[in-house]
Image 1 (tube, one colour):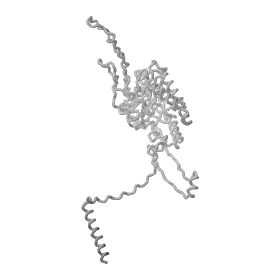
Image 2 (image 1 turned 120 degrees about the vertical axis):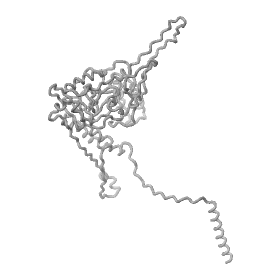
Image 3 (image 1 turned 90 degrees about the vertical axis):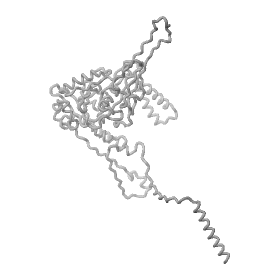
Image 4 (image 1 turned 135 degrees about the horizontal axis):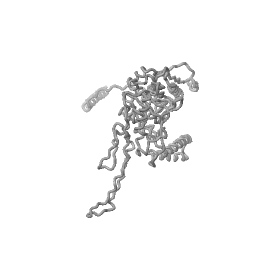
Length: 465
């Protein structure tokens, strides 16, 4: 008993000594941290073309999940009707404006700018093109409903306020009036007038529907890149390891690039950053009064009227697009990705059948004079038309060759004769327009284009792909 009692007493003393030592060397007790709640598991994020955050841009989305009792999971997994998603897109087709009062609600200055407008509106002035436009939009919605990434956004579905047929009672001049927004077209190239590129934003095309045979041997600034792309595509197509599906895609791309190369070698085009032109849907080029490239037009916004021509043909389901030159005149912040006017407050008046042929480089003075004559046949305007200035930098001229000095004390040297050939090729990302032609100083043999910050490429994506 004494031995057991002594052993127990020794154990207690040892335990007490150990605790005392532990308290002396241990750091201050840290406050207890709250136990984190378990993170709930999240469903996988849908990415790529099925990103719903991008698919339903501007579309009001209502969704429900309905369940019904079923058989066992193995059975239901094999039944197509056991797991179904029904898509139903409801779209209200807008009614076109008809009366002068309705037009004035959108553009209050329009009746004042065009005093004869009211007299040109018949009892039913709406053009069949309006119904055709929205029939095309609805058809495209139905065709693309299974491809939600291709659906028109709310903005692009409601992009046209009206399309009216006008005819002056005295002159019988006919015209087409559209009310829409304004997207930006920066397409086009012309090595004869501007040998340098004006940048290549997303969806850029170096050609426009308005074109004419090249007048010089200067190569198109986008030709070399297209030829390089063709060589790469042909090399990939020739590889034995290229998959059949990929070869099919390459075959189509190669055919398109060969056609484009032939076109770039043969023709010159309008330049979106330089020339004032508008874009019309392809469907508008058909009908009793078809609109064709080269037809004269007016763009009306605010208190200003801008003369222009029809320069390009766009998709059949979208309306309201003008060249970057017009867009920047209306709003200096415009870029290929940033439209100048998002509301349906831009009026376009087009004069069908007025194109002058053969086509050639646009003559701004002629465009102004012809539009002035045509609008007078509609009753005239209360303000003068905007006058476009030529902003294409002048063609460089070589510096004169240094001639030998006539002084007998200085012997002429062959190396003293220097011929300077200036270059006007800016950076490929340089985007015109500039506010005025670049001046060439007496001390510089190379004209330097003035790069305006307002025309640099914006990160805002163009909302009318």
